[in-house]
Length: 147
Image (tube, rainbow, N blue to C red):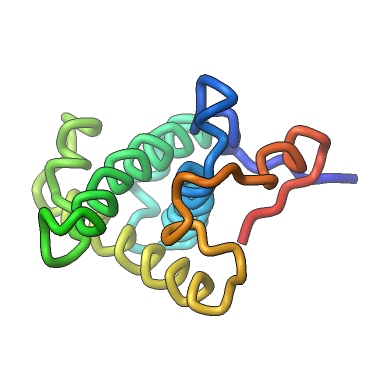
C-alpha cells in the first residue's frame, strides 16, 4: 500500500510547461520542510493548532517563495539564497516573532538536508531548472519519489 504525501506535486504547476525541474525541486523542498516541522519538538504546540493539510499548504507556499530566492541568486541579483521571516509572517499572521524564528530555523535545517542530497543527485534540478522533469509524470502514475 502506497502512503500518499500530504503535499501534492500538482500544487507546483498549473500548465504542462511548468512541469520543470525547478518546480520539482520546490516540491521536494516542501516535503522535506513538512517532515522537519512534524518532527520538531520546538514546534509541537505550533503544529497542534494546525491540521496536516494546513501545515502542508504552508510548506508549499514557503517553498514557492524560496524559488524566487533561488532564481535571484542564480541571476546574480543576490549573493546567497536567503529565506526571510517575512515568508512566514505573510502566511501565518498570528505567529509571534519567536515562533517565526523557530519555523525559519526548521526551514533552514530542511534546506540544508535537501541541498546535501542534491549534491549527489544526478538530476540537476537547479542547474537545469527550466528542463522538463520526468518526475511529475512518474508521480501522476502513482509513485511518490520524494526524498
